[in-house]
Amino acid sequence: MAEPCRLVILISGSGSNLQAFIDAIARGELHARIVAVISNKAAALGLQRAETAGIPTATIDHKQFANREQFDAALRDCVEQFQPDLVILAGFMRILTPVFLRPFIGRLLNIHPSLLPKYPGLHTHQRALDAGDAQAGATVHFVTEELDGGPAIIQAQVAVQYGDTAEQLAARVLQVEHRIYPRAAEWFATGRLSLHDNRATLDGTPLPVTGFIIQD
Image (cartoon, helix red, strand yellow):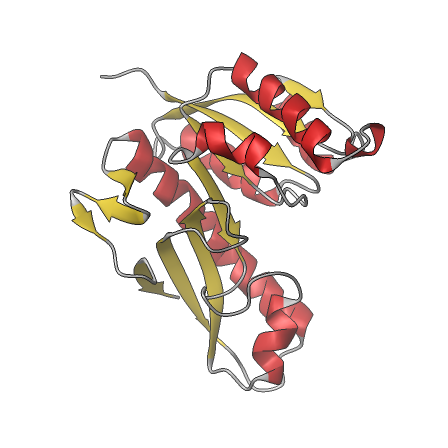
């Protein structure tokens, strides 16, 4: 069998999606190895999750840099030291500039808590509720220079329930995030998923603009 796909995972907070990757690898569902977890916040709980799992960690505090480009250059250099095959943004709460993005285009994934192209940016669950949407969800996508605009890989739809608060909806969406994000990484790790002409391609076939859709 081929060597496991080398993952670097970037976090800013609790690392629940990081834990989903750790668990998927342990179950044999993801042929990968997390070679580093990097955070811009030293107090991020996700760093403790990584250390518990024996994964090397690093912290690069964005507040120590004069501008985004300087931070992104330091982050890029740190990530490249670990020679990743795939870089995973898992709750990394920074808008990244081309200084970081360009070296990793085609091997950089993000998950966004909405059914993109709906609701890029923040407060996605409240925006879905305010619009009266029947479905919310999450989208795994390739990262490009367009914020939350890279080609979709996989979407999970979650029904909006009567009386939902943004917090209740967010909790259910997070559960499906933990399922679809490692699945997308497994597609990449096994050579099934790639980025061609700004389109996500699975098994040689371009995916629809919404990506592969599953319903919870």
